[in-house]
Image (cartoon, rainbow, N blue to C red; front, side, top):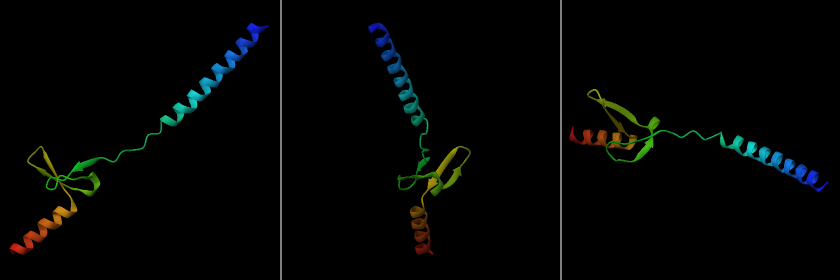
Length: 81
């Protein structure tokens, strides 16, 4: 009789652990999407890639420029002319 009760408790405990593990793993699968970032070629600050202007130099080198650096370069050009 004691063995039957222990077996039932053990079985119930195993089902409970399996159910809790299933719920825990179900929550773990939804990871937030990370935004790809790149570094500005002038100021070296990281920005989301969507906010940067990308220019290709030669066949392989990509340069990224942020809005602030572009505006600074534009104002420097205006001062020289």
